[in-house]
Image (cartoon, rainbow, N blue to C red; front, side, top):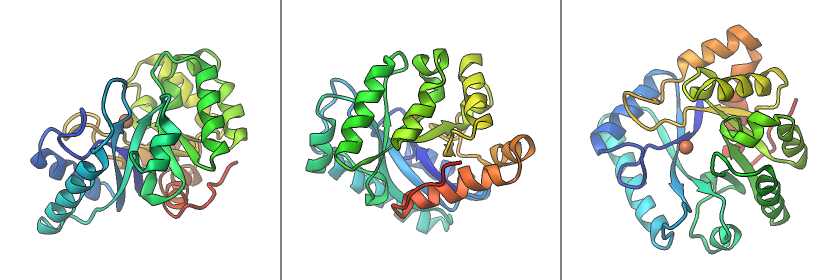
Length: 243
Ligand SMILES: [Fe+2]
């Protein structure tokens, strides 16, 4: 499996709190059948400076890769960020102050939980205009989507890729997120699923249970598409399969 949304690198956000925890998370990932993961730290949060972040990020990514080699953990790491929408988003991407997924044109983006739908439309428009391919992180957790889930069909039709969280499917973010995740899965609107892992013991990188759950409820092709085929296409910069 391929996990394109994880907070694996310590010292950059509210994810792993130490190198030990990051190594433990990676070990869990490998044991549950993940072969490649993007270490997507939060970026472009309001009030946080982004200059210098990429240099620090890459230093930390290299250090974790080294640790995984040392511990013989069979997990390949690629770069990426979970980028919050903001006024300077495109300029920062173009300047290289923010990172795309695995140096492709795919960008993992998010908005605040209570952002209005028009803000998402505007962000997607701006990115697509500049030939970036937006991957919208956990749409099922946004209030505007919980209220009007049909927005997601329009976003998908615009060319946006929709990523749902393991925790939403299992009810960790409340009933509204769970019901909305179900809506996306039933209508085949979710293009990929990811752990959005933050800790070794909470919101983990364990994806085997999710793979089994998706297979049981939505057919065996569902986990194949959401956890392997489409994230693999994103890593290669290819178009995802849209059903
Ligand atoms: Fe995240």
